[in-house]
Length: 555
Image 1 (cartoon, rainbow, N blue to C red):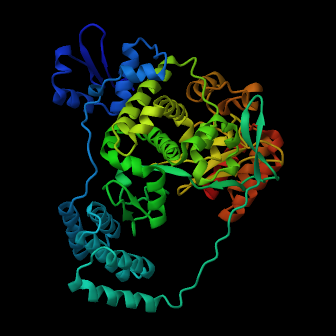
Image 2: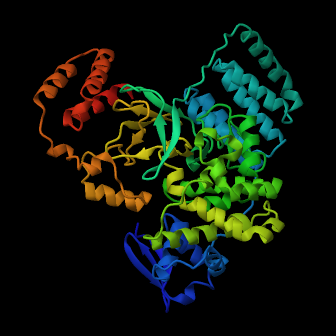
């Protein structure tokens, strides 16, 4: 992206946009914060634009240290003033009344109606009558929709939030009806997944996941829900800000800001304890800092990991320093618990940035800017901690920023997720498994037979295959994005591209016969059997086509 902003060493200030370069005299920069803010706001991603400008102005030479990068950063470089979280009863009432009106006119527009109620609840101050009215109105929607458990949950929230006395009788009548209707509701049993993988480590590929049993083509090897998420701004009122679960029905708000909602009290408490206590204070600043395409949210995700470090230091700094000094104890993702997630990420090997000095410089600037806004100007972070451990905090933030690309890999469009186990799956241009999204969960499906003791491998490319990408091009991209030289079977044996393969007459005849099967279930079984029996013919265009057909039906 050529859209960036930088200072020439001698005189002028340039803005590069898709329409070309605009030049502004240097005298316009410092005396006029309003003009400067407008110029920065022209950027699709202000923080990355400024970071790119900084490293260009240094001729692609990063600072000698993080401390130097931080000392060079001036607050006026970031033209957005510090803001505070807020609630607003007037906004909440307007949203609630609009929801009521929409329900009266078009009751079938349930998604829009509940979204408006969620906004009203999020804007309402804690303990206010407006908050209680939002819950009460939402409970009526659920009662009419025969969602009695959700109705009861909202009634409890309304009763605990200063619900008006003159309307309480009607609310209690609704509660009684719900309880009567729920008396004979059946209960569900939920089975937990078993894990048939183990972490292994080799000198050439580092850590990876290895199968402990045989997997047939089409079997699910791994099914993982995210351990940490950041949601897109447009789904603030339809996804839980902590677990990421889509929920248009009964979200509850952060008690202090209007930028986060949660699917349960447990999620709200966990988020507050781990990271939201710190980000709530600067939630509006973070919107500016991480404004831009979805990839920017990778850094917001690592910032939440950083807050977990800060929380550890506040609670017991000696224990954290001891753990940080020996991160090798946290290199097995199968032993992750929620309290040590940040340590497991920090324990990962850092990417080699020696050949990417520009990338290193950009990351230095982003680390320094994020630290200034999120730590130094954040009243929730104790000043004593900043004074005593600034170098450590900068180092940790930089380490996490360097790993941002790997932390957030494959996620739904409106959410960025950390999947600790999936981060251990290594790349191959001839993979034996494929990643598949199932809501917020990520599945790993065997696309070739996987035998016990074999490493599970996926393709890191967005479409899950390199069948049409020349070896030199894909190896260069992997080096550029993931900082490793690919030595997989496909590269070592120089597998031909799909369009250069000859047809295999027998395989083609059998595959065409399978395609004539009209029953999808039977066709699925035939395709899986075809892939399983003929794996020794890999790579073949018929096998690649068979997998695509299988995936389209199964997934």
